[in-house]
Image 1: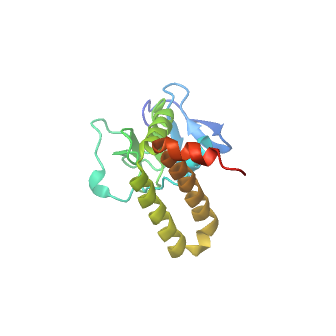
Image 2 (image 1 turned 45 degrees about the vertical axis):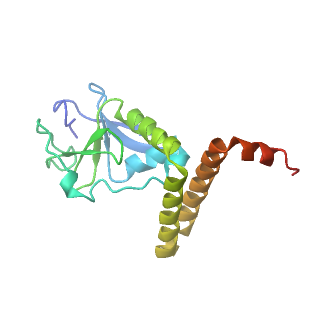
Length: 177
């Protein structure tokens, strides 16, 4: 496969967190086949795994980049879209569902997602918790994943609550085990 940005360099196989990806040694870009980016993101920080969103869900958010870039997998045109609620623009293939990240975009995504979960309010965490419980009820076959997500959100909710109410945290810490 050729690099979609350089167009001359062959992508080299590499491994990130046990996932084999394709990267360009010249420009530093990375090609992720379907679901590989989510897997790597979740390995980088397990607390991010509950942040599920579908990059291909809302086609109205797709933008054609000024420079024509083609999918290294199938040669189709890649579209630009924001990665979830981040400000990072990624290139996606609508056909094979692969994602191209330019140099350092993976790190930027992780940083922005961490900032998002660290800035959520208690009502937002409660809303997220409700969505995950709903997912659990709708997809009991994925109970292990949904319960893990619920546990993460509850932990984040606890941290946020205790941070916003230090007196309560002080009282709780003084209670016997």
